Each structure stands twice: as C-alpha cells, then as structure tokens.
Length: 322
Ligand SMILES: Nc1nc2c(c(=O)[nH]1)N[C@H]1C(S)=C(S)[C@@H](COP(=O)(O)O)O[C@H]1N2
Ligand SMILES: [Mo]
Image 1 (tube, rainbow, N blue to C red):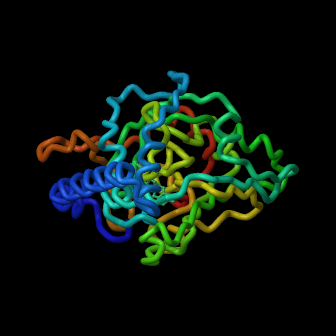
Image 2 (tube, protein in one colour):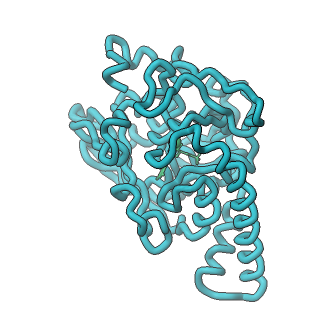
C-alpha cells in the first residue's frame, strides 16, 4: 500500500498474473508429488495444507447481511491477495502461504474483560452457527471484490469474555511465524500486523469472524484459520490469521498508522469523499471485470453499508476522523 499507487498497479498485474498462476500451479504439483513420494518435512506439510484447504465449511446463507453484486470468482479471491507477511506482490500469498502452520491454533481474548480466555480453533468453529454472508471488500489501493465468507459475528466471541466498562477499543494481533513468512523476515511492517476497532464497531453484527469462503475452509492466503471481515472499512482493517484479541481502554496503534500516520487513519471507513493523500478514493475497479475498457465503479459511502453503520459515526467529522 505504501509501495505503489493504484494507477501503477494495473499493467504490472496483467503480466505478473500469469507468473503467479504458474508459480501456484508449480507449488500444487510439488505438493502432490511430495505426498506421493512420501517426502518428509516442509514438502509433506505443504501437501497437507493444500488438502486441508480443500475441506468444506458450509454456512447458512444470511440474505439480510448479503449484497446482491456478482460474486468474484474463487480463483481471483484466492490468487489476488494482500498478506504482506508472505510478500508484497498480489500473487505471493498464494505462492508462499502453504507454509503457514494453522494447527494447533489458539486465540487468546484478554484485557478489559471479566473472563479472559484462550480459545482453541476447534472451539471457535463451534462457538456459533456458521453463516454465509456475501460482503464487499474494498482495498484502499482502489480495487474491490465480492466475497461469500463463512463465519459469524465477532460479537458472539466478545460476549463470551464479558467486556468491562473500560473496554473502549479492541486490538487485533495476527500471527508471526518468522520461519514460514518471507515478508516478516523482510521487515516490511512492524510485525505482528496489528489492527483495531472501537468497541461499538467490533460489536456491530456486520463485523465478522471468518473461517471459510465459498463453502470451503479459508485458504491460508486469505487468512486461515480465522480472520476478520469488516465490510464498511478498507480491507486493511480486517486482520488475517488472528492469534490475540485485546480489549483495551486506549485507541490501539495499528501497524499501518505506525508505518505511515499521514496516510492511514484509525477509522479507515470507506469514503469516496476523502482521498488518500496520494490518490482519489472516488472510484474502484472490481476484480474480475477489469478489462482495459471497463469503466471503474463509483465507490459508495461506507462501501454501501451506510444504512447499517452510519449511526455509529453520528456527529463525527469523517474528514478529520478518516
Ligand atoms: N495479517 C495481515 N492481514 C491483512 C493484511 C496483511 O498484509 N496482513 N492485508 C490487509 C489488506 S490491505 C487487505 S485488502 C485484505 C485482503 O484480504 P484478501 O487477500 O483475503 O482479499 O487483508 C488485510 N488483512
Ligand atoms: Mo488493502
């Protein structure tokens, strides 16, 4: 996000797309071959990760929380990613995230809570009924997707730990597996990747804990085994591969604010009237419909979720609090 401005992205992505597809195919073939030959170590683990990613995870469709836009293809959702721990190029997460260890996995929920607790991923998978919700995702870089996530409201988890009256904000901390994450070794951001929400934002039913996509277990590059989806905010607010959730009194300092405070605000609500300092946020290109002559779409206030969330920001100056 610091590295390029949106207009720089298009031509390079067209050429790099073929490159990453072929790299991904290579890795898949390598995984299958490793399993067949009984190779040990990283190769076998890679093959297992691919097998687990093929698992199903169904959710009851939640029409009230779903947009009707044409859904982005599974291939695009899982091959055009931002997950800087695995590299800054869009194809690198799909190529590299096979090494992410997603079991055993726990998430500790702590801080200003009556009942701090560490949850095992298998507990979290059963904590609340799985729903399928089709959400828009708008990246601050100027592209968007429409994604059928599987999961449930973050509030279901937060209620378990009984937030105290001092819990004004929620901080989300994501995984660091240095040996498995080339981007962590390259020191692009101040790891771990940290994000935050105000408590009322976190408790809003649209704020979602995600475990799957398109009826399948979340692929590693999309943030396995669980990530956030906060559809009215820019994509970077939705941390991947969560390991810790802290309820706190003071506004958390996110990794992006640390890296570039003049460019990234805490709220990061999608807002076509507030440009990023280096580019406009008025329009977006929808991944999958970005032919050379396809017109861009107009970006919607709160990414189209104004009816549900505008009341959270009543009386706030959204230009100052961007
Ligand atoms: N841990 C972590 N979470 C992250 C990121 C990241 O680099 N690391 N990138 C963010 C950004 S900028 C976006 S747009 C979304 C992309 O999610 P997707 O790749 O599943 O579409 O993930 C967000 N969550
Ligand atoms: Mo993003």
